[in-house]
Image 1 (cartoon, rainbow, N blue to C red):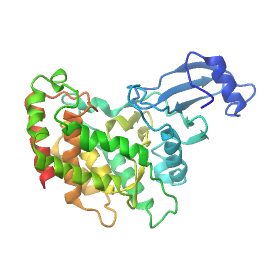
Image 2 (image 1 turned 135 degrees about the vertical axis):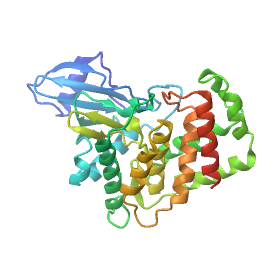
Image 3 (image 1 turned 180 degrees about the horizontal axis):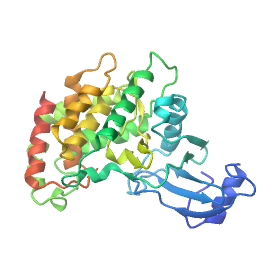
Image 4 (image 1 turned 120 degrees about the vertical axis):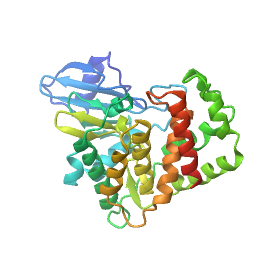
Length: 330
């Protein structure tokens, strides 16, 4: 990596952009800002005297947690996702266009979708997802799953390093009896509740067995992180971002994440019913597997490191964990 992206070094950034012909000779940086709260990558909104765009760099650690190693090439994988899918008019309507990819420096340049907020506000009490947004998100993932599979496209994205990192935080870390993370610092009493599952060896074996579906290459191109943090509310409507966890795998995984987060956001049951009724299942979709993965996603978010801004009491988390437990057991 020869160039290290830093907001405070505008002159160096401008020189980098000019040298790579990402900006015109008479184009100057007017301002830089952080477009949103990100976890994985270093991301900036660049405003020039002509336009604005997003620049993103992935480093060999998680940006929010620098002590956690992460595959440096993840931004390039995200770029591959956009390059593969942006020829599809339906998908292009919902995602930013990719403008440039710098493999050597793990940098991508993306269309600026404008001032927007992600849908993490849904985790607050009594916040409801807009029906039009919900239907757009369902249509997007249906199109992705049905038009980008191994029967229709030759390209393959395995993204195994990111999957191995993610699998640790989904299927293993949350269920370790002593992982160094005191859940009582999140919600008093949660550590004791979690121990019911952390000490159940038969249950943990079931969870571990489910990880093979995630780590085995599959037929369907997945977004890989299909939850409110990857959904943007813009003035033009809902948009989908951050497919850095993408890979060809089981379609059930994306839908399980979507449904699990609607449950944790305490959305009306009609939302889940709408997802299952409107989503166009690709051939071989296995509802029972999807339900088990819903349970895993709920558990890993409540008792794992990847915490959400949930407005849930201990009792509500306990109830969700019990529901997740029974979903996993099938």
